[in-house]
Image 1 (cartoon, rainbow, N blue to C red):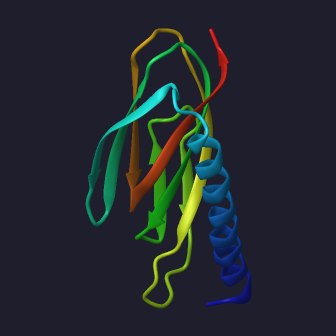
Image 2 (cartoon, rainbow, N blue to C red):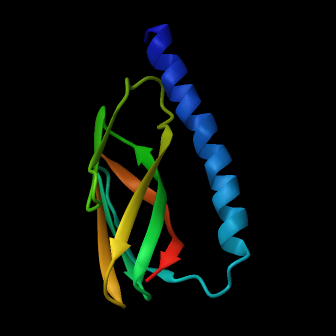
Length: 130
């Protein structure tokens, strides 16, 4: 593995840990958050999660993905994201993603699909209610 790929992977891992800590702290203080995680199907190469958004508005959707293939794709969000990494060792790295979504109706369902990895966690934080 070359030095550049190693630095990218370790940077993503460190950033992911920081974001998880921050999101845990933020979401822990909001007892009436406007999202629920109602389904998580995980397999070796893909996973799907459905978010139920109770109130219309703009949301920041963030998540953690365990990378299990050299190319991982996150779909079901406005801007589909791809992550590539070089497999090395036995440990599978964790990467983060963030998307900004707008929902016009209450009780909207957002399905997030990950190909090449598993979605370990996802949060939807309201930015502005409609």
